[in-house]
Length: 291
Image (cartoon, rainbow, N blue to C red; front, side, top):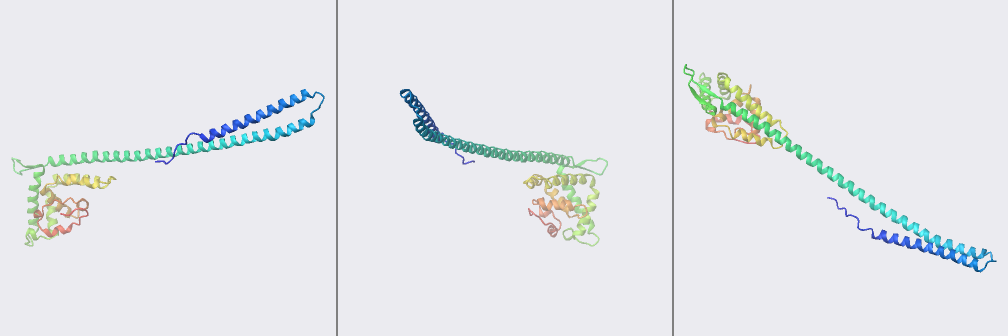
């Protein structure tokens, strides 16, 4: 806000103009009076040249009237300067107000752009989230027999995936006779890779969709984009989190997913009882959340 105070009424200028008019009229009256006096003198003394008298009159007129009119010129010049100064002050104030208005318009445009970017981000994010949820809801597992009965739909499939993963990890450790809860990280990852290859038709699309959604959040310029990961976390089931946990440990194909898991704390709701070997939890280094 500007601290400029609008000029008050031109009282001083009015007084100065009044004095100028007064002195101008006074000079004019003096001139008239001297002229009349000269005419009367010449009329009363027709034989006199009146040169001495005219000389005195001229000196008096030039001294008094000239001084009065010079004073009038000075007063009017001073009034003109004051009016010009006030006009310049008003122009500066208007320029300042114009600058403030432009600044306000720029700030408003920045806010509008931020709001528009936020809306575009949210529209795209929730669209991708809806597509991902649709993909999860369309998951189904069927019997391998001829009946092809449905075993599970949607997120219920991850319970069966979890049990299958456990069996593959057990098979991977069968050679060295190690139990699943004592399995090494390498043997566990080996079992996961075999499990994933056997169920790739569904899980490959699932992880591609999830990584795309997390990549969109990660590359967004929205300041609070990280908080949108909570919408994803809130929908992950316990067994889904366990599959996600072991997928991130697969450093061959799960490097990017592991980075997202650590950055956004996707495993913050992980049920540790579903982790076969609790020592494997230390393989993650969480940036924001811990499980």
